[in-house]
Image (cartoon, rainbow, N blue to C red; front, side, top):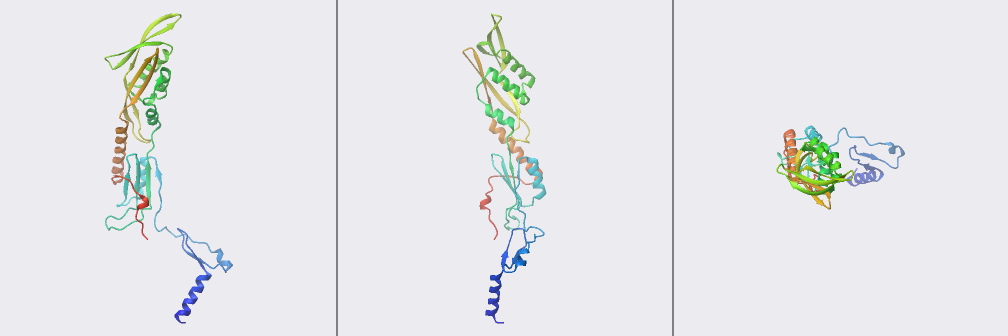
Length: 274
């Protein structure tokens, strides 16, 4: 058979068959003009040619455990100052200079704790006497210094003097402010005082699964028309967040042996093999 005749036979065969390729399956060839060939099912490969996965974790320990299970000597981790970590497990081979697909990744996205969001959101928000007392009660487990018992005494005192008329506030040498007030008891005006700390401290987790950090709060007040209003300012939240992320970076480095690099992994620009 000459070359031209052989090529014609090959071309005719191509016209009578169809090649099918499905990711993860062995390629198959079917002949549409033969009914029985439609019964052919693709067969899975015994193992994929390379691993493709991209799980996202919200817990540092789970992220670390996954990396320990799958990491290689060339795996890399990138992170941002906002607390987003990306591990590229099949990163380029640095030793031989060989490119890899970069299709096996894992992400750690830190989530703010509910108590952090509560104290941050209410920082510098003015609250009436009753509202501030209820806020202290609702979040008493976060109080560090003075402790919950001492601050609950403050809240109880604020509840008890809700109907009082406040005259003035005097700063004390002990770091507290003394409020002088009058209240009407059985048609008689009785004077009284109430002391409230000007600073206090709470213990908050910057992120879920994170340790608690002490957060200093400055308490401010306003006496107007006999009414008393409070607001607090949570101090140094950004440095505390940075310290928390630094602690997570140290944990990942210690437990995986991979030092995260501050920066972004651009998956779209990652060089692919052909």
